[in-house]
Each structure stands twice: as structure tokens, then as C-alpha cells.
Image (cartoon, rainbow, N blue to C red; front, top):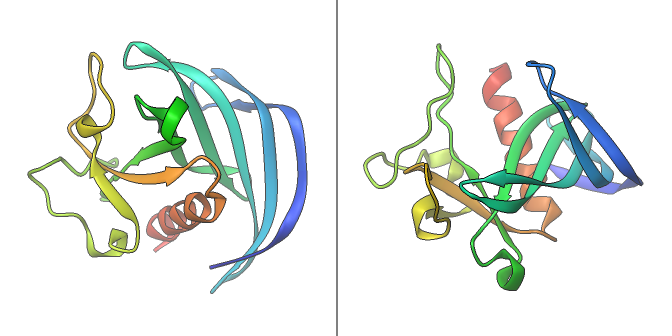
Length: 155
């Protein structure tokens, strides 16, 4: 995967989820990227949502307008700038999370910085999951994770 260029940026992006919930993202940026199967558009949208009892930064990464990865702010995001995305195991039925610390991290995630979600996020209902860590400014890592998930779904 190669990020070619910034394509566009803007404000007030809205994404309508399958359950008809509309989520607002005050800022977004798009990139042209190229993968083994051709060129794609990657959009990274930034917003906030109450998750695990706290208002947290949310990052949605879409490839060709289809959501492929979501990140949420760590407890110390205001200092570290870090966001996490749960590792999910693609299967025949749904996408169960990769449980921390029981499940081995799938080899395809070894190029990413990975931590146990409960070591970086606290609050009621925090999943015991392995998660990819990225800095809020590390768009390349966020896009790479979204591309990986896209490839998992199409293979």
C-alpha cells in the first residue's frame, strides 16, 4: 500500500450506518492510495462519541466510501495523541474480536504496534481485545489497517 497524495479535506462529514444512525465528523481528509488491486480513495473522518463512559475521539477510516476501520481515543489521548482499533478475526459469521490476552495476534497484524485494549482504555464494558495503536496524526498506519481489513473481507 502506498499513499500517493492528499486529495481533499473538509468539514461536516456525515456517515449513515446500516441501522440508520447518522454520525457526525467535524473534520475529514481524503487520500489517493494504491494497492495491489489498483487505486482507491481513503477517507479519514474525525469526531467524538461517548464510549466506555467517556467522551472520546473517534476516527473512521473509509476505503472507497466503505468503513473499514474505527479508532477510539485512549484514556491519555489528550497527552499521547493515541487511538486504538480492536483487532477482529474475519470469519464466516461476523467478526469476533481477538481476545486479550488469550488469543494469539494474527500474523498479518505483526507490522502494527499492538496492545491489550484494557491496558490503555478504562471504563464500563471495555472489551478484552488486542488493539492496533496509532497516533492521531499517523494517517498512514490508519489507512494501512483499513486496507488490510478490506483485503480480509474481499478474499
